[in-house]
Structure formats: C-alpha cells, structure tokens
Figure 1 (tube, rainbow, N blue to C red):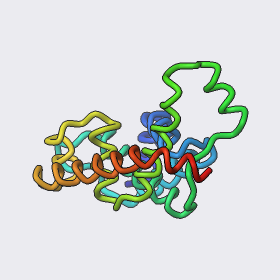
Figure 2 (cartoon, helix red, strand yellow):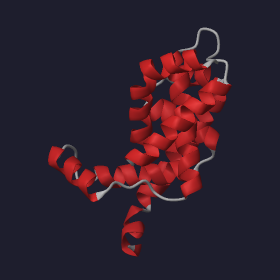
Figure 3 (tube, rainbow, N blue to C red):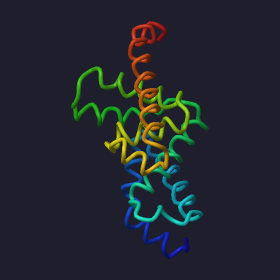
Figure 4 (tube, rainbow, N blue to C red):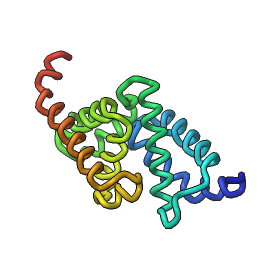
Length: 168
C-alpha cells in the first residue's frame, strides 16, 4: 500500500480505529501507540480479503496491536484519576460493571491470541459465529469451541471473584 492510499485510509477510518483501541487498552497514550502500530502494519498488508469489510479488517489489525501492547506491558489497563472522575460523573451502569470489565481484561490477557480475537469479535463487536468464521478464516466448529473456552474462563474468573477481592 502506498503512502497516498494509507493517508486516505487513515483520514477515513483513523478516528474509528483510535476509538476501538481506546476501548481495549483504556489509556489514551496506549491507544495512540496502538493506532500508529495498526497503520504501520496496514502499510505492509495488501488489504482485506476480496469481499471483506475494510473496517472489520482494520479493527482486526487494531485488536491484534492492542493485545500485543497489553502483553508487552504485562499490566492491567488503567485510567488516570482525571479520566476516572469523568467516567464517574457519567454514572451509568451498576457497581459490578467495574468488576466485569476488570475480569474481562484479565481473561483476555490469559487466553491465547486466537481465542481472544474470536471472543472480542463475537462478544464485544457483536459478530455472529458465522461472521467471525468469515473474518478469521477459522471453521465454524473452531469458533464454537473457542467461544466455549472464552465463556468458561470468564465463568471461572467470575466465580473466583470473592477470593480475588480478599487478596487485595
């Protein structure tokens, strides 16, 4: 992909990709890093498969960059105090939402890349299992098995939650 095509792609989709990165890594500076890495990788690739969605392709690359960043950093995504206060002002959700997000982040870091990608596409992005299979190239059966692993890990972490709180 040449620089002109890349610039057009960034202009058209950069904001959406950045927003997706921010949802995954939770820190603006990490989201910026992931956004830059996403478009560096896009420059090396030819584009989505024929008939594939360009935005879904970009999201897939961005997710991989975010997961790689989180693995390299080896830490749970956190927000700064000012950002936490701004979110608190919005006040939406239940008191358990923070626990759910933390457990989801923990599960994502503990799962292999394939299971993570499939879980995020299905549970967070809302793709059907058939759409996930089309996006990833894995069989529908593999998608089902990986989603079961994803759900099982989340259940285990949710059930262990009281023990996790006691350790703090």
